[in-house]
Length: 516
Image (cartoon, rainbow, N blue to C red; front, side):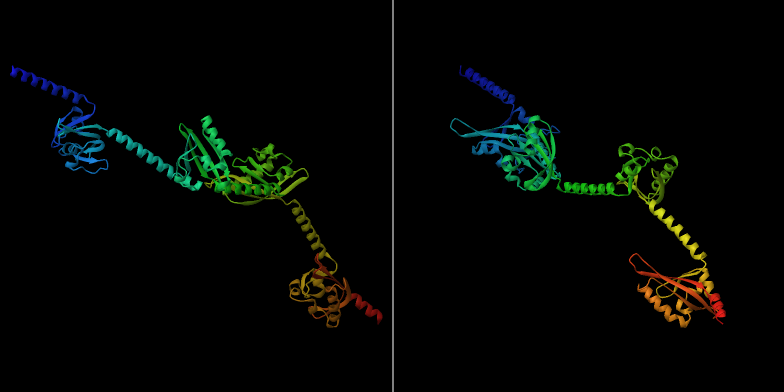
């Protein structure tokens, strides 16, 4: 009877063990049981899987022989300090312990473990149980998230634009280093603080209006504005997202200054171009006008809108246009500044221009157009022609006169003579250019001649006349009637004498004969 009872109890015990094994194996977490010495005596299916190599699938021993167990700081555990061992030997429980199993080849499995001691009815430690779960993927995801966040922060800190993020309550959630610099505030002094509280002067500004519009309409906004408190121009690009607003902004003060200077220079240049009396134009490489100044419009009596985009052949007669375009080709071919004399028919006749033409180049050095600056020299050309004709008339009069004419400098030296004068005194022009009038004047007449010449120089008289004697080259005497005057400049400064002489030798001899 007793034997049958013991057999039934043994069967019931085996059934209980089998049921316990089934329960342990069906648990979603890994479970290990250690005896009172801390040696593993039981593992479930999940625990066996967690003890296998992540790649090769090789199963580790229950006692983890050949594996290194490290804590969350990657420091290795000694066998006595393993959480399960401490629970079995010292009755200590542990919760949420992060550790890792590390194989010799560096493969690892991250685990989250809880342990508790197993006590008998008298409260004596008889072992310990450990429950753990594989958190390798979760840890990897967390590491990936941290790495991604680090990369994003590194990128945001490395970009030249300032950047900050705001949540839906207008609180700063992030600022990069450039934003700290431009806002002149430390990150720790702005994080989780309301932007409008920290920068109240911006509340009633385009910043507030545009940020509000971006959030309400869920659209990106972009604008430029001068921010007086920081005394800088900023370009802002703001992008709404689910949890707030991302704002990129940059200091464009220098860019604005350069733009302002360029605009001022452009206005100055335009002022010069459009107010000058010279004709200024620009043609592209196809010969089409792309810019003309007001003087061009006035001279050719055509509105700018009607001539832009047209060529010379559409504006001038063919022969005139052909000359203009031939000069243009030289500029495009030679790539240098050249000067041309050009003529153009206008309402009051043909005008002559001195035109400077030079190539215009892009940043790569390629010629894309030419500029021309034309100055009307018609009056100058007429004056030159008139002067030329006047000089020709003077030379004809000077040379063909029936009397001798000499131009004498203020020192009495000859500077210009006609042929009759040379014939009267018997010297050639070259010989006389080396002499003064004193050298050929008879000594008895010299004092009177010099006295009147000084008076003429000093402006006391305007002319004088006298009969005097010259000593000819051959030593003979010739009587002349001299009339002298002074040529002065516009300011009255003396320039040179004019001496007009008439040979009166024959008349003198005739008088002497009649007197005798």
